[in-house]
Image (spheres, rainbow, N blue to C red):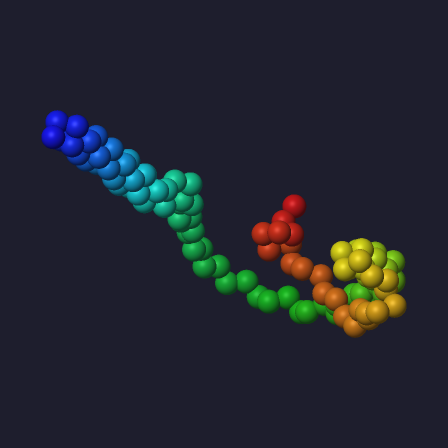
Amino acid sequence: MEWFSEGMVALISGMGTTFLVLIFLSWLIGLLKYVNKPQPVKVETVTTVTPAPAPAPAPAAAKQDDSELVAVIAAAIAATLNTTTDKFQVRSFRRLQPSERWNAR
């Protein structure tokens, strides 16, 4: 009977320790929402009235030859899919804005 009581003490102390550590980890993870939180930026608004300048005509955008870029993108897709470029067509592509996280420099 003595071995049974020793086993129960070991069981309860082991499970108790486990749950206490899990509760501590849960609390610690809950604190992570306060880490590296951006501070709100106070913006002072200054109202000044200035006459709007006449809109200048937009300069004509220089035509840019993107055929090399299309070829590189098509080759990368073909290499990823383990196929040739004959089996697909690039119909259009668009440039991402630099504000997006993966495109930020």
